[in-house]
Amino acid sequence: MVISVNQDNFKQEVIEEKGVVLVDFYADWCGPCRMTGPIIDELSEELKEIKFVKVNIDENPDLASRYQIFSIPSFLIFKNGAVVSSLVGARSKENLLDELKKFTG
Image 1 (cartoon, rainbow, N blue to C red):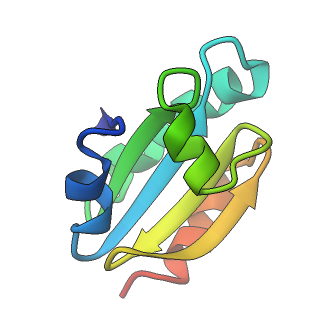
Image 2 (image 1 turned 135 degrees about the vertical axis):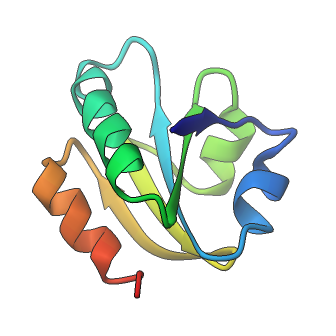
Image 3 (image 1 turned 45 degrees about the vertical axis):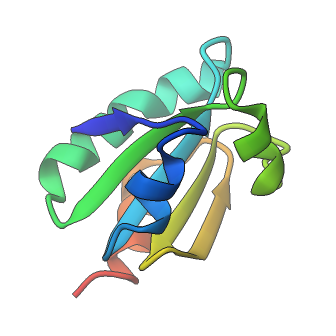
């Protein structure tokens, strides 16, 4: 399951989370974001040990600015509240899976 987060709950849902969190920065109008959305949904069902969240940059420009999101989709991987990886641009399921596996068991 992918959770939508915003400025108000980002700290609680991502920063304070123990373990690995993938944050998908996206916009509704973004074609590549719409292509990667179903991939993120699939991964969230397969990888229960990882938390998946989405941030709409149009609704949360402060978060996009704080994490220097200049292109979308952008994916940040957090582990125990710290950014451990950053991916920019549409990615294949295999590419995302390979990156996530670096930070899990």
